Length: 244
Image 1 (cartoon, helix red, strand yellow):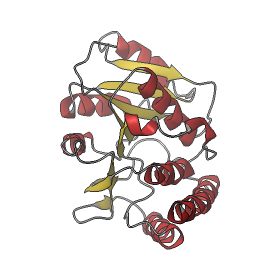
Image 2 (image 1 turned 135 degrees about the horizontal axis):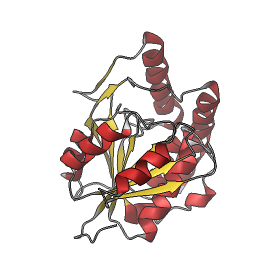
Image 3 (image 1 turned 90 degrees about the vertical axis):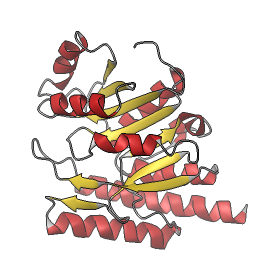
């Protein structure tokens, strides 16, 4: 990695079969946030994603790669990136999807809020946000999942399951990351619950989520179960915070 001026930021992209999307995504990240470093956490993609990143590093030293042994889950990939951000003393960690569904152009808006907030969520469900190119079934499931999160846990956050987030790394250090249990998408709700319990100040900025154009979606019934399991944990954490 290159030398940095504080406050420093790391953009995390967790990948599985995203070789087709990464060239455009990394160019967009560089345009939106030229001072940020980028970490790719790849789960041994059979399409050669990691090989492409290694080749790209020759011309872009601000990109780092961690290649894992197999498809171990989005939650554990994000956790790997969080540990990396802590160990390398970054101030901010921006996580976005590797399939171009999250527009890196939103990063400067997130960064503009860093003095007031510890977590900035790219939200599909606040004014100005939305979804494009998604099936009605995908939209219905997403809206129901977030409604259920507000009902079960009592959160006022509109988009609890968005992976597009900017974290203050100092707040991540207050959490036992290795003690988190969810390995899939449910990790997003689980860590949100722990951050709120730790007193994190959270806000949302609007994003328009674009359904992936290249590759296949990673959403599955197993991921849905992970999300519901995380909500049960989050509800218990929320109740314990209120009692405390």
